[in-house]
Image (tube, rainbow, N blue to C red; front, side, top):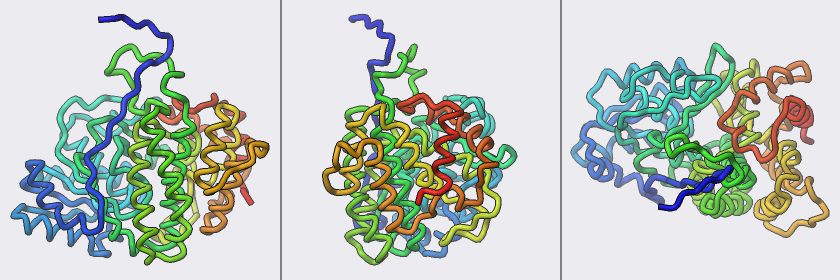
Length: 427
């Protein structure tokens, strides 16, 4: 067998769960569970999604297939370590041998954490990525998890990632490992028809930044070589397979997001956004995200008084709003790392060629036009942050090792501060 001694990585990995996509796909979920060997299923969802009736439809389909099913509807929007512990405690009390996550990223991330902590020893902090947590690797098999997204946003149905708000640290962080990837993603665009305009906009911007960040991430073969397969990171960097999905997702969002926000009953737009979310998960779930997502975690963790339209009445910055708020300045900063990719991203999102002379401003301009059209917050200051908060935000960003490992341009504290300062108001 030949021996390779490369100072940089020469291997990339790519994986995604089986995908069932289409109008009415939920009706078959009982048969899907049977195929996975599940007999007692727990639906994990949040109160808002429960009120929509979708979890009840899922439970009915499961019962129709002759399986046992129960519903836990206590998921917190933007889950915290405390809310996840509550869900884990509930899941430990029953006979469930499989899980169904129904909702947005909050439900899917909570379900992943439940699956992890009901099958592995230790606490959530043991598995959180360093330097915040212990970075422990799950060694035991997990139970089958079917992910049913009801928003076109996180792409969590296709990824290995679980993100949590650590209340005492006032910071978001994540766990990522291939064992957390759902066994099946069931995407039915009909479940997104009732999503309010502001939530549709925020979720759509999450899709877009996932795709654009992964497409402009550090290339897998520009990273230091990993010593062995077990040490290889789940976020491997931009690679030829993920690139295909990310390009398609950017094109889909540019075509459909405005329409989905302005008319939630536009089934064609809802279909396009649901498809965009699913394929983005297949891209960024392997390549990885970088600066806008690293910035988003301290933004969400440190917020005090911001209340977002369309979300529960509590202080929070929805994830899609948080990532979008610094995306323009972040891509302006990363432009020199690969101008061609940044210009191509601008073309795909904008739906037309861009002038190469526009340079570093092309992608920020396209993002600004889109965000203004769908009435996104004007910048980080809209969440209540000022210049006085920049040190806190920068400090939280620099702790996000998972994202910073694939940042295409080294991010110093000075550069991060400049990005946040430029993002206080984007227009």
